Length: 322
Image (cartoon, rainbow, N blue to C red):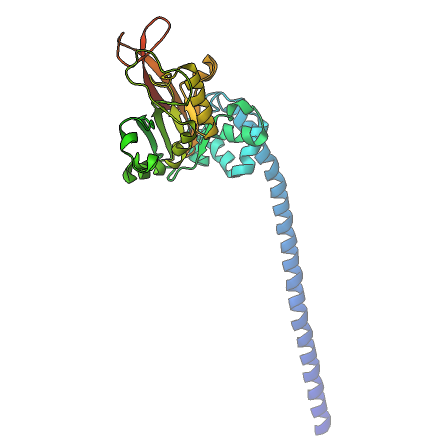
């Protein structure tokens, strides 16, 4: 009897253990199914949200175009293609930031610089250059990296003369290497943009102006020396560029072009001579203009126009509207 009771107890314990094990095993299965269901629900929600977001990003471009004024776009012919380029280059977050500002009534064009570190003028040039659109707008632009975009350094130097037969040229032992001190060279090279007034002609030809006390010229091959000084542009709007006549002037333009030096204030025709030059640095587009103003009649050394009036040089730089 005791043996049978013992067998019954063992049997009951076995059944209990088996039952308990089955319950233990089915519980994780239920949990796994619940987790899988929750995951599928979340995935479905994310998919639905992403499908809703894509049209919103595309719609942002249209909303900005509808909301912004011509001044905000600096009167450039901005369209969906340009806005798409902005989104690709800078991300949809920039579009959202721009739209938020516009919605709050802020139409300041400098918002472009605030969110992209480039002004609208620079962005348009970058877009045109990449898309090969309106090539005339970027053909004569100088592009320079700024050492510190928050503080652009521009160096504008006065008259320079590389004529070996005058003053510094006569005293220099190592040709043009001695024309400038190490301190001056360091300053010119370290600037983000450097411009000088080219107060002489690059020519070995032409006739010296009759009756002019001082006439300066240098060999055209010496124009490349300007590059070693970090000079990006020269002004030819001065009273010595015609010291050796029209031939000397044209030789000067050729020499500068061959050396890769941009020039302002002169040209082969009035259109070229009066053209505005541009430099892009630190996310800003800067306009350079070189020109003459009339000087007192009879002033020594000045160029005379057909009416016999003298002229003196001026160079100005100004940043376009933000």
